[in-house]
Amino acid sequence: MFPRTIVGGVSVSRLIIGTNWFVGCSHNTAAKDLYLKQNMDLKKITDILEVFLNAGVDAIIGNAPIVFEASREAQQRTGKKMTIINTPGFVFSPTVPGHPMISPKTPPAADWGLDVDAVARCLDEEAKRGTIFCLPHQGTTDTLLDRCTHSIRHMDVITRMIRERGMIPGLSSHMPEAIVYADETGLDVETYISIYNAMGFLMELEVDWTSRIIANARKPVLTIKPMAAGQLRPFQALAFVWNTIREQDMVAVGTMSPDEARECIDLSLSFLERRTVSVKLQETRSKSSVKRKA
Figure: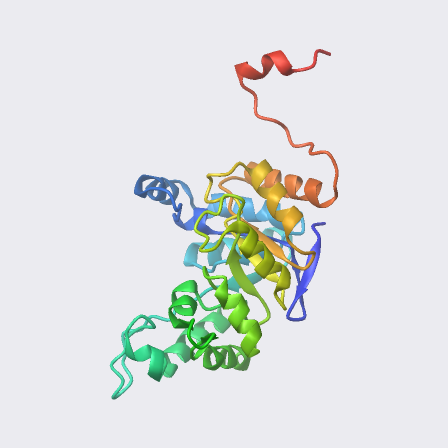
């Protein structure tokens, strides 16, 4: 079974199931997004999740409606429990009397905070749907990050409310400072999401700087986009991340088929176990001259 780590007292697989491909988020083109939305359905997603669960990869990041339904179906098929990690965004239409803000991105939010009642409603729904780890989305975290004070404004209020509902708080961020500031201020979080790939795709700092920040983090780090949204091949991408993170850290991967899921699992295990990769190679006519004869 896949190696595991402990996050906030909970055992989770070090490989995490990513869900961007499931919901049509390609970080590529509008045409690619549309292709994903037209071709990914409940059965296909459930089949992929079944492969992961049977390999001991039992944590998933994302809880969109179709992902929620597929997770339930996969758990019923396999009899295995899945750990839900979600990243809710706190964007609201209600306003607090006297505080004319509707989201973290409006100017008053920096000083006055968010609509606490709206935060409560959002978190109540997360708890109701079985979320175990609740990490406010990058759109909330990074908007409230303050480089002047080395803090993430109002995040202590949100993390306390997450705890009150029996969930485990963390941070989802595209800014490496979020890890540093959370540690410096003693923010009550048990993990952090950080973009990390050999290409530097979507990363705000150089790869070596981000690697050092992850290595010095006080809590386990969940690294995302290891394959740079499909711009890196799995062999190179997974070899890099598994060999440059710590034993307590995690890697999220997105796949579009059960066979891709199996490949990512097998490649990851090969790198972690320091053994020769045995995944079947792609065949093209140009490879014929280098194939060994029987």
